[in-house]
Image (cartoon, rainbow, N blue to C red):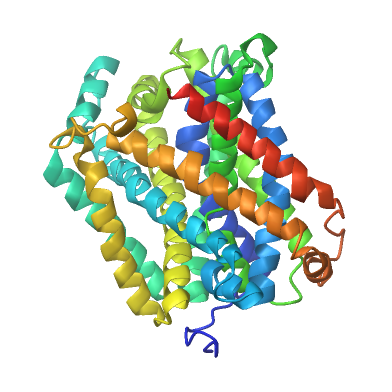
Length: 452
């Protein structure tokens, strides 16, 4: 079906389950399995987890409801949708532009991490990391970051896989892929968590992850928790708006949004359980940082009985999580761009790829040829993350919150109630207009100050 407003092909979910697993897959990704465990380890354990869950409840879930409703009501993606809702010249269209900027920036550097995971699958299963010390594994991983032919080739392979899936459309491509990837990811994390809970001293890892140490609570931890909340939920990144546009009026937005957001937290907790039980059992450093998955965990798996199987499955499912996020983000970028200028789907997907690849070159070169390029004192990878997570995405979140609580409020309450079977979106207008914007702005300001 073609939308008469934009000339773009109108997509639609095939089932409620397909929508839920695709939304969970889009938001969960490496944010839950790669980033969440190392962020817990680097930010005080249980207190970080507690703040993160609070942010999910008070920010992510309300914003998810708003984005899905705006998308379903307009039946368009973020830019075209806001033009339809408020007029082409309306300042509220900035919601779409900031969301689009976030998703393009995020994909451009995020895909390099997923490409590393893809390579690790073959390296680990083939026994290429077998017998290495943790320092040797760390050195190997560092070597990959300066191997430019490897970087460009693996990133191009990732884009090729994503394009093939997305060309299939929402039902045959995105939805079909996630119906396999996400249940498989969940089942594996449950099995790995149970298996690792049987290791000696494993329960110490669970206790550490769930015990808040409020003495470690500071501005840096709160900012890190907001950053993780954004990764967990995917709000303010255009994709939830697009996903909402594919929903029919029988869809239960309040319930779907709640299930999707809480499912992301559950996957993150399962990943943390699987990882920290193993780390405590083998006496490893829980604060290993971003190298936790690529440097520490391979060593842990090497020490385990049957570790090559567990490690191989771990990286396969980690790749599945990352791929599900990439195709979800890519879907958002392509749909927003295509509907904004009236391109058909395939054209938008391929032009988005060209933009994304060019935008990602600085990130790929950030460890070699452009290592000395340090805007605001940051390497280019960190700078891209800074712009997306502390500027464009928070601005989009604040605008969505204010818009939902003001000009869109009556339509928001009316439209989100259509199809609602269990409960309705709470009518707490001041929370959208005042509370959420202040919370987001305050935490972001603290976070930015921490960089300087």
